[in-house]
Image (cartoon, rainbow, N blue to C red; front, side, top):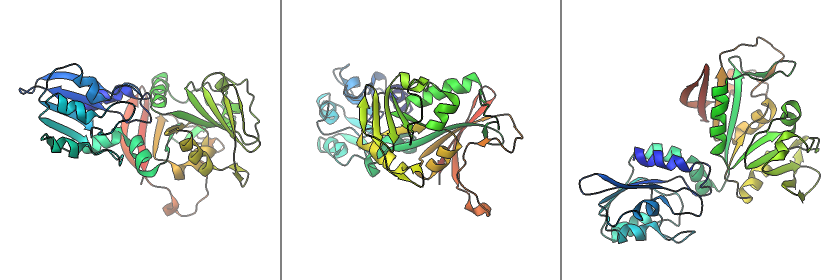
Length: 333
């Protein structure tokens, strides 16, 4: 199953709205005779990718319940049965209600085992699970700060807080998501490239320069209060405004309608703070630096509290090192 998960990760950024799936097939002596993974949306699922390489097999391992219905490709259960597989080991059940692969396999006389490394398999496909169970876009935030939580000095200086190794890993994280999101304030302050196939810009009054770096590449959705229009790669979406701010509820609902199943927010503290109530996951890079600047910008800036019990609470899931920097990955409780 660990091998299945490793294989599945090769499809990151390419399979949406489908899940990440890897497959391993062994013979009766437990030797691996074929492997496969879902390489790209519309192409063969992992089971078919593996089984097309062999004539017969004994045991098939897969991190997600095989599909039993026609979609872009035929049902995986059919080819499992055709290839004479005797045992199927599954990491987790498919949250898609139309999938009933386990029953179909059992009805065919195949021995099915489920729940192997289930938590790891669920984490692998956390985006797909939210899409299926809630019909909502998965929302993540990436931020990078000093040890005292600052993302820029009081003069606006921010390049670079973290090391090149950390910034290289950010590009890997971006690739996992259908789109990245930022604000007009970030574009005006930093003129970032944010290279990605899809970008979401929150620009209420359309004050950003369309010659800015971020607009030069990708399919771009600009949420604003003034107009609906399409001009080349720019999709202007008229958006409700409340208290002078773009409605994030509208934005996230619209993204799901547009088929954007996941989004990574990279912005300043204002948008980052506002988005926390909707967020499913946070990637927080910490550089071993302290500004000591009480007027500098914080990574989450959205409320004033008097009681420490008013803090939002999170669970740290993982800690990794990239050069001198630490990446904390955490989830809301």
